[in-house]
Image (tube, rainbow, N blue to C red):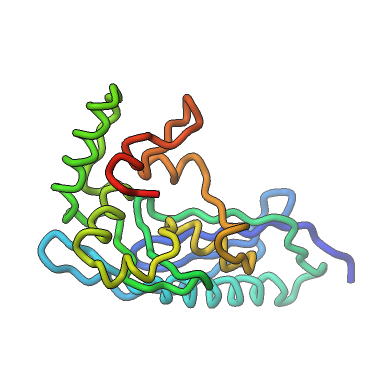
Length: 206
């Protein structure tokens, strides 16, 4: 049976993970959706177990590939993949990429004070880009100040897409875990200068 060149798209939202196998002509060869439990809500806090993200992604990929192979006249060969996830959602991980605390969702709004501290630091450095409570940078600072048990075990804070990409690549901290400019915006990355905001170091974020 001949090979069929395909790409794999993965989308992770608050309600679940979706996988799509698409051939080089744009034809959908297989797709699947695996639901996730709703994030836990407490006041303005929104948390989800990041391990469930990975489980849902794996299940969705397997189901989509199974459907792509079912009755196919060629064997789908995945040549590339792309992962999309909610912007601003982060998870603290240890040196083996295992979550050491909850995933804080994109709409978690507890870090208002931390956002204010970041904005004060940025203004003092002559930067005008505002941080808000939904930004990953503010959430990282909130975890460092409000969840010291988590912060003490955290080696890195990964965006949701970064966590899934790292698991797919079997990456190991710190050498081969990466982010992208789009997700990094909410962690204080400036795409114009292609550098992190000095406000991060000013408030104690490495």
